[in-house]
Image (cartoon, rainbow, N blue to C red):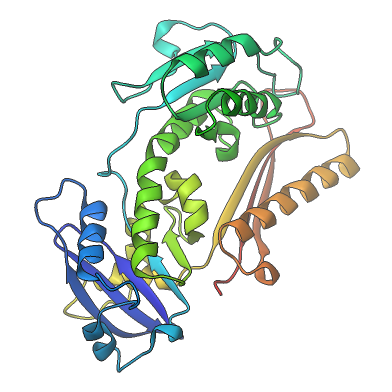
Length: 345
């Protein structure tokens, strides 16, 4: 049996599904006056379940036909994060100077941003040596712990983003660091925006994951992705942006709600999903053999990621791969996107 949970402002819907068929559903009270729906709903759940030895309320088990906690294989949470609080972010861009209008933008008023010398072209050519002193000075002086790092050319070569992460971690041991190359977008500003938003959501994602784990002890927890599929709580803590519209995506998939409970479609849609992970890279290959090696590396990375996203290792598989030449650049550059999926325990 799998539990699907849809935290809401007024109520949180819980659906129990066995073999793809809803067994039962019920609601738990939320908090009408909270500014943040998911947070308020999960806080209310934690208060409603003071005895952590029980996975769900006795009334819930009664509604399920006296199911036992040990029969719950996993819980799938579907929520939208657009109303959740965000943290101030320290944004580091590795690249050349730019006009103020094109500088890194951090929406939180207490955030900070800088541009340091470095970066690569999409062919892997160094544009400048990384200014390590500037990175250290900014990390030590910004007073923040959530960092977003974006380097020119990182979808093809992420060396400078990885180097900056090491420098930041040395200066701020408690830092949470998001690297833009992990989101794969070829455009620098697009990747930068996603990295900053992901970094700003990480503290709240950790809190949400902890709340769910506190009242479902010992049960694997998954979160619904924006583009469909699930990720593990561990993956959600690091990449909450991939779940920013999880409830919306789950609702679109959950086409079998109870007639009098349309909100149950969100939780049911989440339980139908499986762990999914994506990898997007720019690769350079001078012939078919070299391209095949690059594609093999991308496939391996996608399979590793989907296991990190909660797939049972033996179930990991490649669902889709697209390879397109990059226009307006030298021959031999390809944009590669790989999607991997797997099964829940």
